[in-house]
Amino acid sequence: MHRRKAPMADGRWRPETGVMPLIETTQPPASPALPNTLRLGAVHLTVADLDRSVAWYQRSLGLHVHGHEIAHAELGDGIETVLVLHEDPPARAAGRHAGLYHYALLYATREELARAAVRLAATRTPIQGASDHGTHEAIYLPDADGNGIELAWDRDRDAWPAGLGYDRGPGPLDFDPWGAAIAIVSTAATGLRSTASVGTDKPSPYLKQLAKHFRHKLDVRFDDHEAVIPFSFGHAQLRAGEGELRLEAFAQTPAGLTRVQQVVASHLERFGRRDELVVSWTGADR
Image (tube, rainbow, N blue to C red):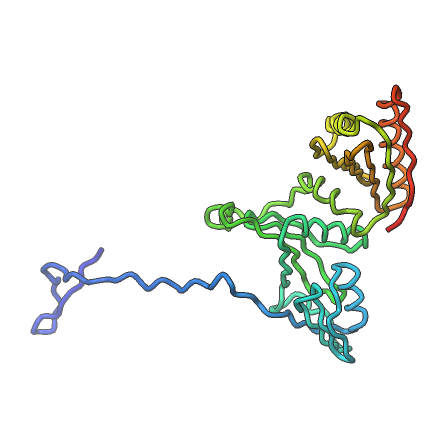
C-alpha cells in the first residue's frame, strides 16, 4: 500500500507520517426477506390467434378456461387464474432479443409434474429440454406462439444444495427415477384401461409372486396388498382383495394395452396353473 503525501508550506509534497485514524464501520442492514405467503399474479401474454392458443393450453397443459371473450381469455387450474391471453393478429414471435425468456408454472408435487410430462407425451407436444437444478426439476417447452414455458416442481428447502447450485449450473433431468411415478399416473388421466378379477384364496401371495418376478428388470413397487408394474408400453396395477386378485391394465394405445394384458395374464396363469387361475379382461375405456 502506498503512503499518501501531504503538502508542505512551500507547496512541495512530503510523505505523510503518523498513525492512520481508526475508521468505524458498520454492517449494512440485512435485506428484508420476502414473505412465504407472497404469490405472483397471472401472466399476461400476447398471442396472434386466441382460439389456437386456448386450444393448445387446454390440450397440452390441461388448463381450464375461466373466461373467453373476443380478444382475451383467462386460463387456470379451475380455481385460480394463472394465464391471461390477449389477441393481436399481427403479433409475431419475439425472436432472440431482450424480453421474456420464459415464465414458469409451479406444480405442488413431483407426481403432478410427472402427470404433466405424461400429458405432453400423450399429446405429442414438443419440448426444448429438461433440467435438474438441485432446487427443482423442470421441463422447458414453447407454446403455440413460441413463448417459453417452464414446468417445475420445487424440492423441500432442506434439500436445496449449498449456494443453490449456481456454482455448477443445472444438470440433465434423470428420467429413470420417474419411471414408477409416470407409470402410476400415466393412463388414469390420458390412456386406455381394462380390468380383470381373478378369484383365488391366495390373492396376496400371487400378487407378490408377480411383483417379485418383474422386479428383477423393472422398477416395481409393491406391498402385501398392492403392486404397480411399469412396462415400457404401459403399466399394471394389482390389488389383493377378499377372495380375489383385482388387475388393471393401462396403456396409451390399444396395442400397448393388449400387450400389458397378455404379459400379466400369461404369467399369472402360469404361476397359478395348479389353482387353475384364468384371467378374463373387460373394458378398454378412457
